Amino acid sequence: MNIAILSNGNANYSTKRLVEEAKKHGHRVRVVKYKNCYLSLNEKHPDIFYKGEKLPKYDVIIPRIANYMTRYGSAIVRQFEMQGVWTVSSSIAITRARDKLRSQQILTKAGIDTPKTLVSRNTTDIDDLLEQIGLPVIIKLASSTHGNGVVLADTKKAARSALQAFYLYNEEGTNILLQEYVKESAGTDIRAFVVGSRVVASMKRQSLDDDFRSNLHKGGGGVSVKLTPEENRIAVKAAKAMGLHIAGVDLMRSNRGPLVLEVNASPGFGVEKITGRNVAEKIIDYVEHNATRRNAKDKVGA
Ligand SMILES: Nc1ncnc2c1ncn2[C@@H]1O[C@H](COP(=O)(O)OP(=O)(O)O)[C@@H](O)[C@H]1O
Ligand SMILES: [Mg+2]
Image (cartoon, rainbow, N blue to C red):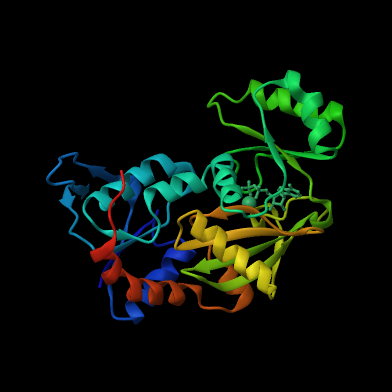
């Protein structure tokens, strides 16, 4: 097969691993730096160019779009979709996954438990909101990544001033979520790496200090963990609801069962090092089994 990986480059561990496994399986694989691609919006020939070269028609693309490039990256993915190329993550699914509010709406509609969440644009509602959600409260930007837009407020005063600061400096108009603090899971969460309809690796992440955030980027560490059948089922269901064939589903173990925190469209492969599982190979296997069939079947949505 002729595979393109849309990525910022070969230096990225996940990209390197995908290239390695694709080659091992005898495929032609190319890393396309989507940032440097340009598009030709012609109805009959939705071409994609890279440094003056028109890219050929690939059998499948594996998008690894960085968070800060979501808009441009998903436009490039869409162009491949217009060519009828099968993508393991559709442009719509990527965009939805990057918005915590949109994601939560999709997950709750699918009957998946998530932490209780409220969204409002008015600080005047704060007393009402806090009454409903209780204290401490988590306040987060809908576009947060790596835990950088997530705050824990212990008191009403702290919550009000954090919210005011968020609203004031929120020039892009990102939505702000107030969320129930799942304290029984403080500082830990579970990453389930889903490929197709299976969890292929899972790890528990733990903050190494007293931070309530367990993001690896914030210095958290991870250990391999076995999921309960319910966690397994929910992780697969969440990926499916989001329309992602490859997903990193973050779960919290709460007193009322597993809650889905978020679903990542380009999950990192750090989980390979922690669990010893060959995630990249599972993805290539999945692509092999599905690309031809899907190429024939998939309709491209607008
Ligand atoms: N409602 C919550 N209750 C307890 N901890 C939370 C909650 N929401 C987030 N956290 C912690 O903060 C981390 C970052 O939050 P998350 O929503 O995943 O944002 P990001 O996308 O920036 O990583 C989570 O991995 C988790 O450890
Ligand atoms: Mg997260």
